[in-house]
Structures are given as C-alpha cells and as structure tokens.
Length: 178
Ligand code: FES
Ligand code: FES
Image: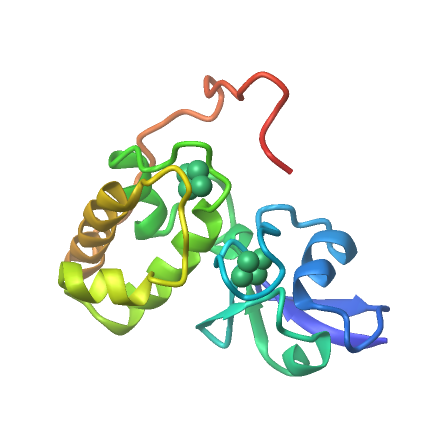
C-alpha cells in the first residue's frame, strides 16, 4: 500500500509497484479521462503530469510516482467545478479542437506543460512540444491555434469563464468514450 497525491488529494493505492500509472489512474482511481492508446509510449493518449512535467503514464510504474504530484485531466482548473477551466481547456473549447476526442486529454496535458514553460510559443515550438501526441483525426491546425490562444489567456491573466453550459451539453449516442 502506498500513498499517492493525485490532483491534490492523497490517495491510498493497493496495487503492485510495477503497475503502470495509467492503470492506477483508470482502474484503481476510476479516473477515465486519461486514455489507453498504444501502451508503448508512442501515441501520447495517456499523458499526465508528474510534478508538472508531462509523462507517458503507460510506461511509468507506480513506484516512480510515489512522493510526487500526479495531475490528470480531471485535476486541471481549480477542481471546484466545471465552471473554472484551465486556460488551455477554455482555448480548446473556443477553437472547437476536438473531433472524436480520444487523443485530446493527452494533447491538453502536453499543451498545459508547454504554456507553463513557454508564455508565447511559436508554431514550431508547439509542434515540437506536442510531436509525441498523435491525433488520428488530424486536429493539429486547431491544436496550434488553441495553444496560442491559451498562452494569450495565460499572459493576460484574465479569469477564465466557461463559454458553454454543461446543463445543455449533449453527449454523443452511446455516451462519452471511457
Ligand atoms: S498509451 Fe501511452 S503513449 Fe500510447
Ligand atoms: S480527436 Fe480523434 S484522435 Fe484526436
């Protein structure tokens, strides 16, 4: 049994220490926002943060996360409600980035790390930082636009107010991907 800080909350994890962090998050903690894509570090769908740095959770054993801060897509914003979005989430909505959505939590986690480190990334810097995050729907142009907009929101330091109403949001037939 080890303690793990996930999205600011200490959680007790009773899983083998070599369990990939991806399965700790999804199966152990029931946080389904982080996706399984390739399981080999090739697609970026499983990207989470360890101490603010993006990592491939499919390749990260539970043992190496002990004593470090784990942040998943569910931990962005201030976590108090869906009305308090991270600037990257807000920019993603404004640019209507998402298509099927499967890669998007990984893309967003990579983008958050980028705008945290670089307040005004160029397109080349965006492409380089997100090169390991693949999108089979080809949303790359909208991702670039959204990252630039997120950086702008962050530089201005304005409060982020959501531009959509979850009460009227419509889930696709069959529900959101788990
Ligand atoms: S599932 Fe981890 S990189 Fe693809
Ligand atoms: S939005 Fe479909 S894989 Fe990226």
